[in-house]
Each structure stands twice: as C-alpha cells, then as structure tokens.
Length: 199
Image (cartoon, rainbow, N blue to C red; front, side, top):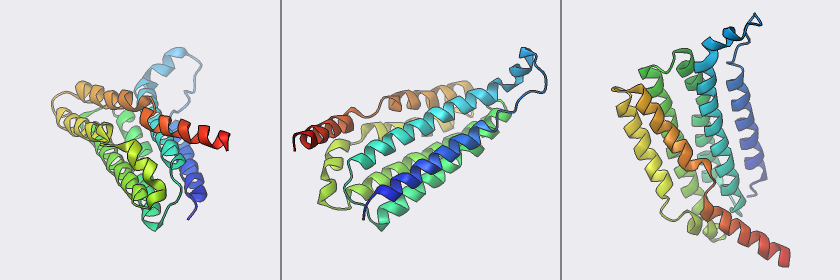
C-alpha cells in the first residue's frame, strides 16, 4: 500500500493538536501587560508541548520518507501514536492551569511514555513491512535515543513526587535530545536524493 494517505492524515491530526493547544491561551479582557502574568504557566506548558509535537512531526516525516510500503499493521501502529499525541492538549492544559503541580506532571509524563512506546511500535511495524523498508532498519540501528528517552520519562515520573522542577527539567532534556532530527536518517535521505538526482 502507498503511504500518501497515512502521511496526509497524520499531518492533519498534528496540525489540529497544535491548534487545540493554542486555544487554551485565553486573551485577557484588559490591555494592561500585567494581565499576561497569570498566563505564563499556560504559555510555558504550551511552548513545551508545541516543541514536542514539532519533534514528533519532524521525525515522523523523516520516518515515512524512508518507507516505500506500509501495511495494515503499520496503519494501526500509526493510529496508536496519534492517539497518545491527541492526549497532549489535555495534559498540557491541565499542567498549565495548575502551575505544574505534581499529578499534572505525572500525567504529562504518562502521555509522553505512551507516545514514545507507540513511536517505537510504529518503527517496528514499518521495518517489518518488507525488504523495501530495509534502509529504515539500518538507519534506526539500536535506537539509543528512543531507549534513553523512555528511561528519562520513567525517572521524571518518579522524581515528580520529590521535585516538580527537576521532573520538568528531565522532560525538557528529552526534548533537547530529539530537537535536532536524527542524523542517521538524514544521511540516508541525502543518499537517496543524490541517487534520484543522478537517474
């Protein structure tokens, strides 16, 4: 099966997720700049989640760029990922409205853990689609970034019971790790494009 519809649907869902999140930034009814001060936790949680959705969109794009074929299993795996990402606006709003309290950060971590596992399952599903997707398997290798991310999320969840600030720092650390797209994937994409240009 072709991957066009899966990619277009995913792009649409991610765009809606970002739109829903920004709607949580309520406009003050006065023009005094001090009226913006109560919004800073909501804005910071939005900024963090915007970066995370951007990271998933970027890596999802790279992932599908390397894939020649998909199957029913990979379509369900993709929907599983979108399910967890669709919970990000709720977790973001709850965390921002409650000024990064313990249980809101724990829920946020749970959503990130679910999304990380779902992304890994999508990766496995795409690799198992057939030999045409073998370059993806080569690019992913041992996926140390994915494994490290899960460890940090779990650590962040436990740390939230002691220090919400450190827990948030750990969540931000994972975003920093993934902020630059995976160089292994980019190298293979560049090779593919070079071969295409020569033909």
